[in-house]
Length: 283
Ligand code: AMP
Ligand code: MN
Ligand code: MN
Ligand code: MN
Image (cartoon, rainbow, N blue to C red):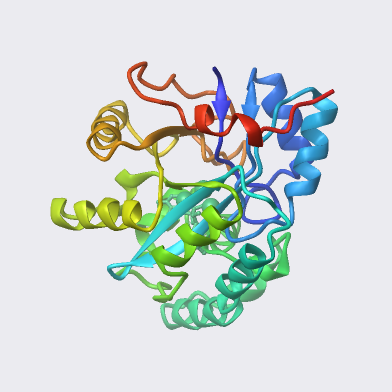
């Protein structure tokens, strides 16, 4: 099945509205879709309605920012109740502090001669509650500091580079329990991105499971074929459901389009097998 269970709209740091994403997913042959904005459920109703209009089965989704071993880890929640009060409050708390962090990021960039980046980034923000590094990256490209957003994330905004401001997000325990209590399945997003040592990575997956986490993204826009194979092994080792999602943000920036990923390895159990009751079917 061509499931695409990870992408972003203007409600977080994507450049397309939820309606445009639904149409694009349908046109690209997606058969099960989820919008997973960062720390925010504000796009869920729109995505669900647009998916229904397009005849596209839909799962509610979210991508929660977590701090684990001083590293930012992303936990995707699928099949959640998007009105769940505890999840909504947890996400609101997780979003808080983005504004102050963004102002600090701009102060740090000013120290290396890049002025006005807070105001610049704000011009790309669709949701004032959710200013992110991606919006700074777009501004740095548009103003000619970098050629593309990949260059921004090599030269700026990451640990050890100008404009990086460490931040405390939700705890792993909180994110996983919020998702589970809202009826969803918690999934470790794009694990190859974190650069953990084998011991740290083992700690991540064992603690994640201990808190009730159930899945891992195996095939994602952030993984090479070798990384997908490696995390297929992790899914087997930890008895986790396998997820698949492009992490599409923008037609101009994303390497993998909605629906454009290779299939999951056939030996794994897809996460949607555990979510059949949570799928919003059109018609
Ligand atoms: P934030 O939540 O403000 O820390 O921003 C994180 C977002 O920055 C991610 O969700 C990605 O959209 C983007 N990002 C992080 N690292 C990279 C990278 N190496 N290349 C492109 N985008 C990145
Ligand atoms: Mn993002
Ligand atoms: Mn992510
Ligand atoms: Mn993402």
